[in-house]
Amino acid sequence: MELLHSATFPSKQKLLIVVTISISLFTIIPLLYPFFEDPNFFLKQQPPNQTNTILKLQNGLVTTHESCDIFSGQWVPNPEAPYYTNTTCWAIHEHQNCMKFGRPDMDFMQWKWRPDGCEDAVPVFDPLRFLEMMRGKTMAFVGDSVSRNHMQSLICLLSQVEYPVDASVKADDYFKRWTYETYNFTIAPFWTPHLVKSTEPDPTQPRHTDLFNLYLDEADESWTAEIGVFDYVIISSGHWHFRPSVYYENRKITGCHYCQLPNITDLTMVYGYRKAFRTAFKAILDSDSFNGVMYLRTFAPSHFEGGLWNEGGDCLRKQPYQSNETQDEMTMKLHKIQLEEFWRAEEEAKKKGKRLRLLDTTQAMWLRPDGHPSRYGHPLEANVTLYNDCVHWCLPGPIDNLNDFLLAMLKREEDEGLLAQVRKMLS
Ligand SMILES: *[C@@H]1O[C@H](CO)[C@@H](O)[C@H](O)[C@H]1NC(C)=O
Ligand SMILES: *[C@@H]1O[C@H](CO)[C@@H](O)[C@H](O)[C@H]1NC(C)=O
Ligand SMILES: *[C@@H]1O[C@H](CO)[C@@H](O)[C@H](O)[C@H]1NC(C)=O
Ligand SMILES: *[C@@H]1O[C@H](CO)[C@@H](O)[C@H](O)[C@H]1NC(C)=O
Ligand SMILES: *[C@@H]1O[C@H](CO)[C@@H](O)[C@H](O)[C@H]1NC(C)=O
Ligand SMILES: *[C@@H]1O[C@H](CO)[C@@H](O)[C@H](O)[C@H]1NC(C)=O
Image 1 (spheres, rainbow, N blue to C red):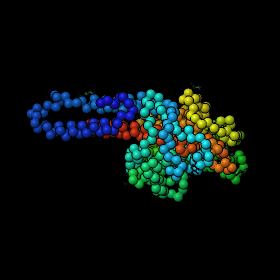
Image 2: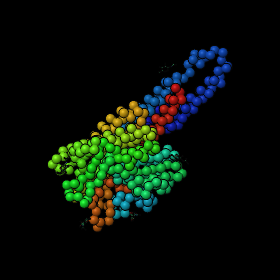
Image 3: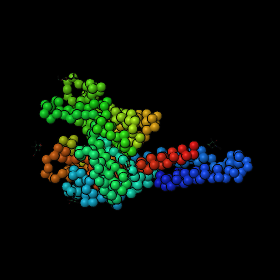
Image 4: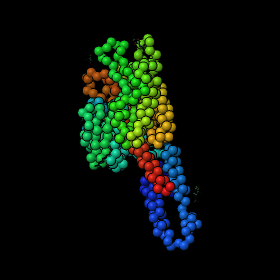
């Protein structure tokens, strides 16, 4: 089997051929058997060594997948993009509808990702292929408004084929369900900006109690209670952890992030960030009902330059960075924490037969300072808190490419699933 040469081989077809051959072998052998007087005929004839075939197949896939890190690469021009506009897709959130609010440049929509060393491994999103793969499946987007931004990008890309119908079971906009009726495919956002249980600051309280309370060892039940039935769960979290918070563990205060209270230790946000992911992964690992694939979509950095978000910082670039541009320190730190916690959880997942995967898109998104709304997320004269939005992403825009990565990862999962079936069949 020639499985080693590229990442775009039609693996499904090849695996299906192997499956077919194997099935034929099993059915033909008993049929022929009566014709041979020597019951050991086939052993002596050395039929194709099935163990070898599987090993080769497996090595092919593993080599293709592991030799290529699809997440390291660069952005290259793609004059064919965008694949939808604000008139063909209704799902664009007002604040990410940059063209509506007069963003003058279009170049930021016209790039695609080219991984180093395996150029075609992340093709442009194919909505039909995606929907075919998702037939009868469910997918959850667990996180904050950037997670919702990603989900809306997916809905817009899929709008080239079909629009979903509102199949929500709750009235709450933060917990909707969208179903593609032709494919019986359902997408659901789950609003949980910290992933762990949290309470909002009380605006009526004096300044020093204007803090979030984060229960770092308790996952937020608004998503954990519902996640069991989903086939795919995409988890992400980031920007809300920057806000001043008090940390609780075992229901007791153990520290805080920028609370400025004399009797509480400031453990900094990286402490809370690590614990939040540890708790979220634990919830997935401990779930008896969850049998799907969990993807960690790693931190998508903001790009304020010339000041912080509330100090006149802005994002005015019109082109991606070159791939050698070094990440800012905070992005590096948060990304590192995510990877460490992911690998830690993955060890455990392997033992439990659970599937945890990495959508390691931090570097790709880091290279896109040009993709944010800046001041084009609202009418020019609006009085809004985040005037220059360098956190969310314009639609269409670079966040669409997260779905290129997602589809590439789903294809790998499919390959591995087929391989497992072949192995089982031949064992
Ligand atoms: C098939 O190949 C495997 C691995 O190379 C080897 O361990 C096994 O003995 C072989 N089986 C036969 C029947 O030749
Ligand atoms: C779409 O963008 C155009 C500018 O390209 C703008 O004039 C129009 O109002 C927008 N429409 C919607 C529905 O957002
Ligand atoms: C649609 O998919 C769900 C699982 O996501 C399944 O329970 C249900 O039976 C499917 N419905 C049809 C009509 O196939
Ligand atoms: C810290 O001090 C405040 C104000 O004196 C008090 O309300 C709070 O309970 C104290 N917290 C801890 C953890 O001791
Ligand atoms: C990246 O490479 C380009 C071209 O080689 C160079 O001009 C630029 O200064 C480099 N940037 C960094 C941050 O090293
Ligand atoms: C903007 O809104 C804030 C609070 O909503 C208010 O305090 C402020 O005066 C407003 N500024 C202007 C220029 O309207």
